[in-house]
Image (cartoon, rainbow, N blue to C red; front, side, top):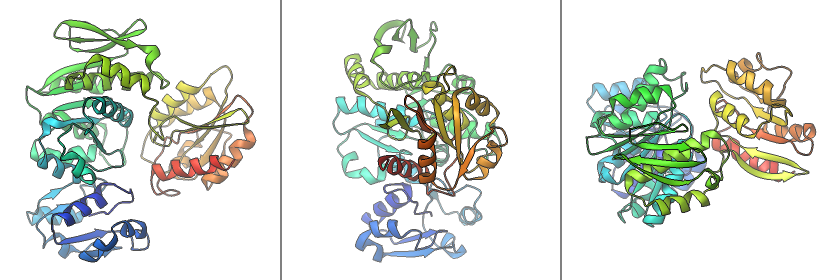
Amino acid sequence: MGLGSYRDGSGISATRFLLDQGAQLTVTDLKTADQLAPQIKRLGRRATKINFVLGRHRISDFKNTDLIIKNPGVPNTSKYLAIAVKNQIPIETDVSLFFQLIDRKRIIGITGTRGKSTTTTLIYEILKLINRWAVLGGNIAKSPLAQMSKVAKGGPVALELSSWMLESLAPHQISPYISVFTNIYPDHLNTYRGIDDYVAAKEHIFLGQNIQDWTILNRDNSFTRKSGAKTPGRRMWFSLKEFSEENGCFVRGKNIYCRLNGKEKRVLSLIDIKIPGDHNRANVLAAISGALAYGAPIAVIRKAVKNFKGVPNRLELLRTVKGVNYYNDTTSTTPEATMAALQSLGDAKQKKIILIAGGSDKGLDFNALAREIKKYCRQVIFLSGIGTDRLKQLVTPAAEVASMTEAVNLAQQFAASGEIILLSPACASFGLFNNEFDRGDQFRRAVKKL
């Protein structure tokens, strides 16, 4: 249910995997065959073995089947899923299926509103130095089901887990052996009834653990600090501030230290961290904590952190053209994420940022972001969307455009040498783009042509 648009995303990867197992498969999606043509083409000859029901869903498909694999993005409120539940048909995602196929003690799971992709990738880079068969997957645009041949080699698996993926683990009461919870900020409030429901979905990352498992949480975030009281596993904190007694990683002076069972060790210097901003220091702390829980030696952790230059689409410096730096931060889809980008790159005295922002709405509060935009940005260019309609009431004057090419060309006209052009939307991508990665790719192409 939901073939999806990512090359190795949940839907298409589950389709390929199930075909390999010899399943009789129906693929149903509200998108039409024309809209899904690139995905169907990727299936190659195997597409002839599939019963496609596209541009619609049929009630009969949700009654007369043995198993439903839903794309994580399909809302649980779907009337078709309700029909499946009524008919006692099991509903899984690619991730919940994966958890049932391998030993969960191999899995390090990472969730949170911000920083989970960076944290997951850095954990993977550390694990890869220990075991070359380490696997990176999940909500980072590559399903673990797309990598089963590598998974079969027996290495550790670093999985980025969205709230929707975690909800699919809840019926099985299963969680990763090591769970890393980066933070919580308001997000997806167009999908959840409120922040409490959103937090509850995220907490499934540790609710299925036992006392031998590890839970790593952000001590500086009020939501995750409160969640820490609920974990059944061994708890480890991370913080940008020093704290006493409990297990965890923290900053003391210009160094990162870790405390386990009362023993403290220096891990590395803050100078070793190449990615900018306090939010990225927090991500590094989270990754170090996860790696230490797995048993990674400090020397290996230090080497990986020193070599880590960040993740594409997250404060990614693309080019410098005529003295202007172009940064791609397309995965900042919340106000808090864009605020972190502005604080990392900005200078309130000089106002040297031209910001490209806006898009579709997730029901989030833009007031604090508007204040930060006024503080750090000399000019704002908005991409059309319902979120933009709300944001532009708080930020004036600002230009509005209907394409990424138009946004980049206009930004170049505004910018002077020494300034920054930053794509950091604070909104979802749907409308003008297929997803946030398509938005980033269009920005990348437009910048490349300058």
